[in-house]
Length: 414
Image 1 (cartoon, rainbow, N blue to C red):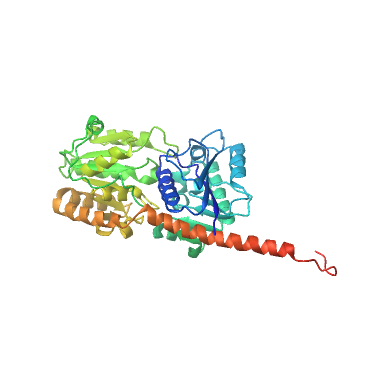
Image 2: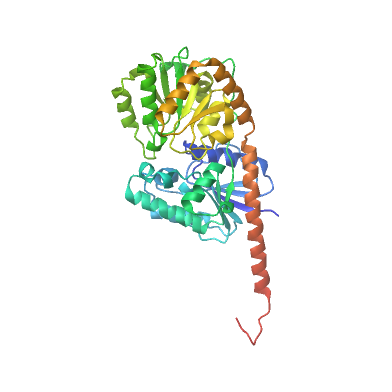
């Protein structure tokens, strides 16, 4: 049975985690599945990759990129939503897949629908992610509409599934697991030198270096990390400690408190010890992670926590929040703490920084754990769900055709 699968690919060009997720997952899906037909619906530049013959691209003109307009502080016009909804309501589609609920729009189609909800962060910390009441109300409406219209939901980890069951009050068996992995570019390079760009930031790799990789939204809990670093410098004698914070603070479309973090770093007297690099391309990030002492992921919640796995794949020890699937998937490749417990983070950071033997053990465990994850495996999980939905769609269409051909009993006209 060959399916025609429509995909909302408007997040393809996004730099945040869900954009990376969409590119990696859909890239693996297209590479593995030459039997079905795919239509990628975009609102921006086409994918740079050479697409196989069974994949076509449909571009919809919108006034603003969907992933900017649909973000927490953005506004998505009704005209843009209507145009995208029309393009996705193609009756030729057997299955329709939304890789993220951020870009979801209601559609009028008989196709079976699969919507991916990556995490329950916005439901658990609404004031930190969507501070404007109107934006918060629209988010709730969008998620409710997606729940109502979707024939199935998907998420990226067992942890996220448990949280979504708790917050959205949906049955666990309605939420399918479609995992994540780090890109193959992130790998351990035993003999690697700093790039000129990294050196230009003033990063000294002959000193202990803590790396944070991600966005600057309040739920990322970076104020706690800054306080902990300040304590390690002033009270624990780590005067040469550096904190390198990597993330695109200039083009942040989600609610951000980057300026407050800059001011906090100055107030704490951290000065040049805190380095904000802005956006870095993946190859530069991979070099940084190979050279860093440790990566810290202090978030109040993560649906997956991809930076932790990118770091571990580069041989960088990881300290991560317990409010994530990282402890389940990375195991002894990381050390973990409750995100509201600053003392616990300080203790484990000090232990990892001061123990080369512990870092070697964490490196070996982390490399083994990340080797067990792959985008191909995630794509196969997705393909299984799409195939199951496609079978149900085909069975319904065949039943409708059969019913429409039945002769009408004159005594009981329809």
